[in-house]
Length: 437
Ligand SMILES: Nc1ncnc2c1ncn2[C@@H]1O[C@H](COP(=O)(O)OP(=O)(O)OP(=O)(O)O)[C@@H](O)[C@H]1O
Ligand SMILES: [Mg+2]
Image (tube, rainbow, N blue to C red; front, side, top):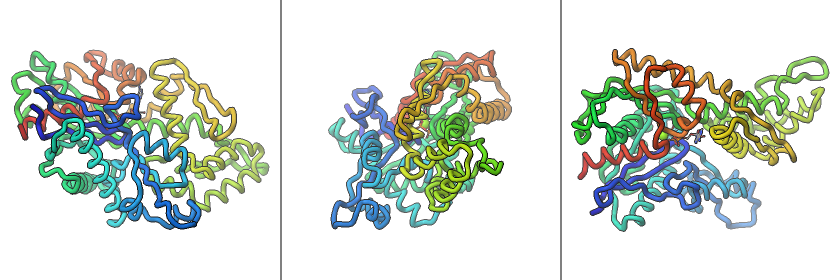
């Protein structure tokens, strides 16, 4: 028998869906164009209406996101990302909508994001319904402990309320939420034989979350687990921040940072501000603004070594930020399996390739890692207990640099790395089963 509820992991980098089929948790195929069809890139491409004779660039300026949402074609995941790379001017690309749900932005803009989320959740729901041949109307959606926001708890409330409205509009009649690391905890609990003080560390693209709790076989089916949760915390930094730090550390010098003008002035850091900001629309808009184009042009004329600055100009003129950050992310992922990797930036300049060593990445990760350690230490302090095991999940947990850093910091604690892309969604499904079955 198949149940009419699903678990949803609405992630910054990837989304996933799971359902209960024949008494078994089952992942839903959500992206047939992905290497792993059970996760879909959190990316949306809205194609412009192909009517009239105006050029596509003019159309880009004319059509608001809202118009496109109501009338244009929408592509999700790999298909959306690839369409954007092929025809960046023919539509609008939104990467990681989750990053903007808690943002302090005008209501009109927030409403557009809500519509985007409605469309994305509808797509995920349809994937499940098609695969299961059943109408799905109940869901547990995993959420970060802290959404990206400058408004603290207000930002969390705004984001969760938006998700709830969007899920309702997408056709879900019953919706509950669960903190992402707690969802992962429920999943790991399925394998627990004796009560274990467990620290679940979920390192995603947008946030790094932990929950410290007592997992046990006896309570694994209970709905209310508050008494077993010692502490839960989350920081608004994850893989994307570490990719941006990698870009600043390794790519910026190729773009002329650290150089000088002919009259001895330093090339200012502000020239690069926003160049890597795939998670911050205002900063990225700043980078693409005419004022920055002029500043880059002026410094090219004034620099002792203009070639690196013309690369930055290519990124600006070609709006190549997303493509560049994707290349950097791929190099970082490559470095999880190899001690060195090639970062190919040939779309910026023919033959522009850089060899990156794993150790160089560690240097750029230190900032984020230190914040994560502080969060774990505070969690332990609040709990007044020591963990017996660390369960490491989320994509960034696959990095041997992260695993090694955790092992060095907590030498007495056993570390298990598992189910990087499925633990959260499978745990959300377990909560859905406890609620709705
Ligand atoms: N093999 C790997 N080695 C290192 N990093 C990786 C690897 N695979 C994926 N990542 C990184 O993991 C991050 C994505 O992880 P994940 O899919 O768990 O995030 P998410 O759930 O979408 O985000 P969040 O939970 O923060 O909303 C990205 O930054 C990606 O670059
Ligand atoms: Mg996640």
